[in-house]
Image 1 (cartoon, rainbow, N blue to C red):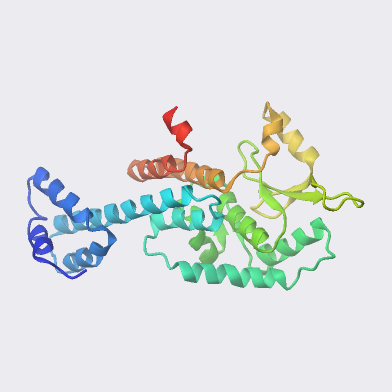
Image 2 (tube, rainbow, N blue to C red):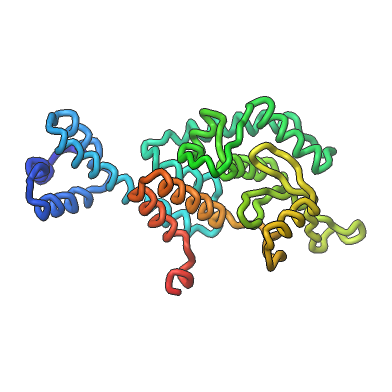
Length: 296
């Protein structure tokens, strides 16, 4: 943004010791939106006072966060919010200058490698074996438990760069690739876990146009690609004394997936004694809630 007389005047007052003056200046600067960021970065480079630099850094973060809130709200209000877009928005919290085309290019390279190995004659288990072979053997994706409390494992760009993630980021990657390649894998609402399931749609041979019947074939652990049966999951639910088990076999929506992912990220920031970051994640989560739930 080309510096105006107003911007120059505001910058001259950015080191004002009176907090009320500083707050007023901050609000006016934030009205310019993300276009003001290059000006703030230039001011930071030409400032030697560390306390002023901290104020500038805070302002830059507030502008980025304000912009991210708008993006989250727009994504939440879409009829069919894309899962990858939601994961990229989560990553933008930590990496506001994220190079999204580069991330999508990495994703497409993985998709191409899987696509080359797929064909229409593979069984559901064989299809999943192709995914697992490419993701965990060829690309050597490594899963980390949520109990490790590492924020970096929640950001999809870091997963693609480092090949390490947790059940949410690896799960999102798995789900996005399945959607791109028309493989019916979905995230399930199993408590205390983030697992996937292959749900096939069966059609009657003599009535192919009739509505199909969904049949859950097996479950998948995104940390490793390990396959579990319905009996395995039922045993787990019994072990944790889970009730109302019918609801646990309903696929999650993309908004629900991102919400749960952010819930774990906020808990991770709390664990690492970063309450301010946790609070901002909670604020973003509020934007994903349905209006009737907000009113309640």
